[in-house]
Image (cartoon, rainbow, N blue to C red; front, top):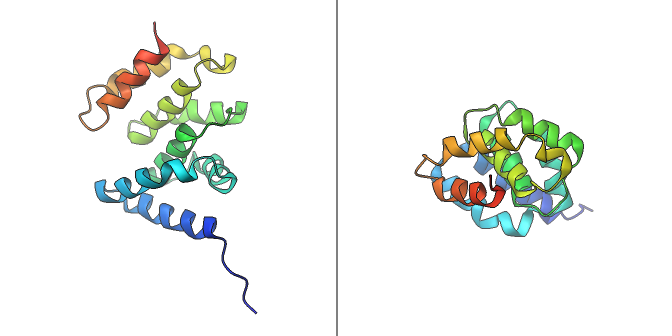
Length: 141
């Protein structure tokens, strides 16, 4: 007898497929589901192991899940996200957002200026300027 598939795994595979498609329509689908999935342990585990994925859309998805989640970032998460901020694509922006959201964590405060610089670059991007400006305001000077 076949075991029923875990809904979380099916949903994760669907979201991964959307991120691989990497267009506005597929990201709208991901964004719509993000509040329901971002704190799920399966999604968080996937995100933590895919921050450095070769595919840009999957790095972006990993950082987006961590940004949306309410978890305290581990030192390993922080280090990987800091490295991902070097990426000039949206994944680098999402990494900066994930870190900015948790700016009060001591291990993140030390590179607040790097986070600010990344957010300032994307504050000029029509697609994400509102998000970038909200995080810039939240981290202060």
